[in-house]
Length: 188
Image (tube, rainbow, N blue to C red):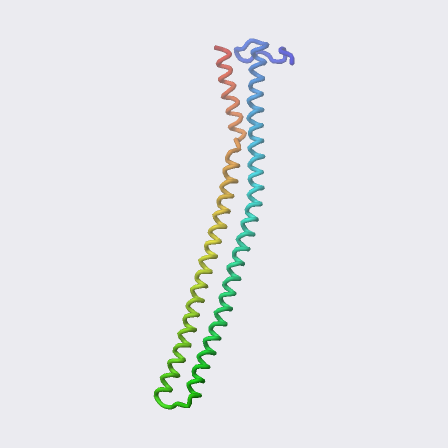
């Protein structure tokens, strides 16, 4: 590099000091631009990783929701079978009472009791099924909250990564500030 290529800058003598000053400014600018480029690459990598993680969160959400949906379907089918069994038991009990060939108030009371027991059993099954349905809704809401929390965290990571990228203006201002500091040191 030829020292004569750098004329005197401001109050600096031509030659070595002027060349060092110009080289320092260039290095500061190059360092700032390289840091900006590295921050942009890191932000892009964070973005790509977040896209993959978001797809994974969606797949997990879908799988979990299908699992609890299947569980509710099984509970409903089991409850329907139990209600049918209780209805059949009630009918069998009433049939047995009628087959005993008794008459009068006692038979009517026994028939009413058998019907009441059957109805109570079916109502108990209905309440358990309603409870399972409410629990299903709460579970789905929990899964949605969990998925949304993951999404929000991923978005926060992306935002933080992009906020770490210095602007061109700040790089130029930092380079100028360092240049003024160097100039002041060299001219003092």
